[in-house]
Length: 226
Image (cartoon, rainbow, N blue to C red; front, side, top):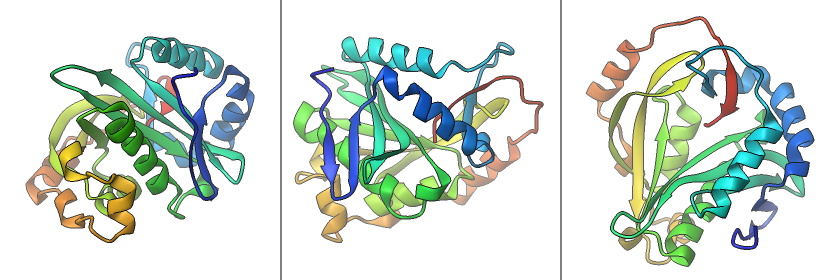
């Protein structure tokens, strides 16, 4: 865990997740069930109860192998969500993916925008990774607003990419590379130099993604991925 830093910006903190956080996280997930359900990863194989403590242990195991950076998001010292940097690859690829979720009462105040920028900057500027990606459900307007504000580039539509809320769902994907943000994602946004138009999704991709939405019965809830 010593390799995972604690990152701060004002009242917002990203700190490494601990097994002892399981009770607070489970309580937050339950109280935000309706808010998070449309974006929850689900198990395509069948039923089963989601184990928060087991999930944290799995994240920590991956972190020990330098594959993942698992954080909790704190607002004024209170846990309000999770952010995970996953799929960390090195060498010729040097890339990672950011996923997240946040409680309803903390959403809409820029918390996740700052948290995402903090994580991206740590990966690009401190670890020396080259590319950071975020994949979002095309109907998730709040997450789309985050990549717009931070100036992530739209890179394409991934068909039936992740099993979410009971079915395989299309995602639209965005990325930033180190050369685009020599002073960091957060600095570029705060300086007013991030271009929201870079995250514009072509109407044709949105139409194709909407056409793929087929309601299915839910089977097994998993962790929200944003």
